[in-house]
Length: 90
Image (cartoon, rainbow, N blue to C red):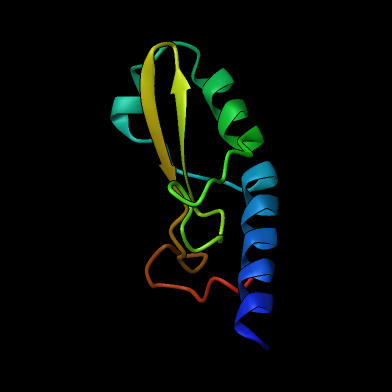
């Protein structure tokens, strides 16, 4: 697969994961107001500028939430959360 095609495929998988996947929220985020609203905002985030997402994989983002800058990141783990997983693995 050509490198550009790989990046496009990874970004599609990451966008799909954000809209439906299971994720972990840090304790710091749990202390914020309206965590369900924040999760929805992360799921709907489409601001993937080159400065935020230089590799085009849609695996990192920054949103402003109730005056706080929130960073979100997708890390690739297997289903047991023990080992790294290839980002092309659905």
